[in-house]
Image (cartoon, rainbow, N blue to C red; front, top):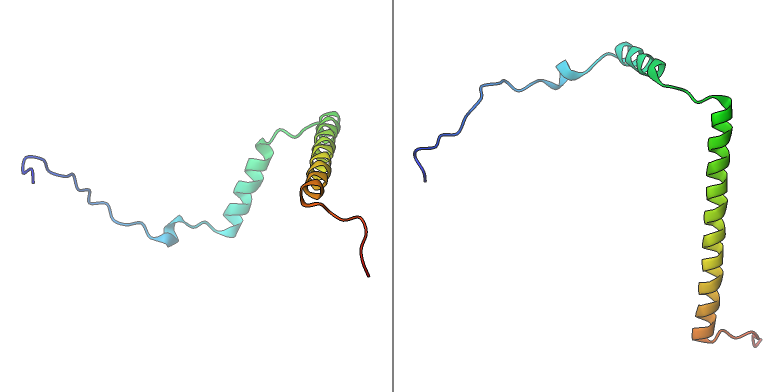
Length: 87
């Protein structure tokens, strides 16, 4: 071991968990204060964002549906799915 180097040790007492907690009323006031800082979208922006999200979701549904159909047909081709069933 190297005797020339010494580790720095701090004498800070451990914080108690109780001192870090806030009361529910204080928490609520802080939440309200933060929500006042939020820039809320206008109705026109909200409609635009809604339409963009809906178009994206519909586009993704179409892609997943086409891929599902293609892979389903490929699996039936590979494993020879039978069209008739014997009773």
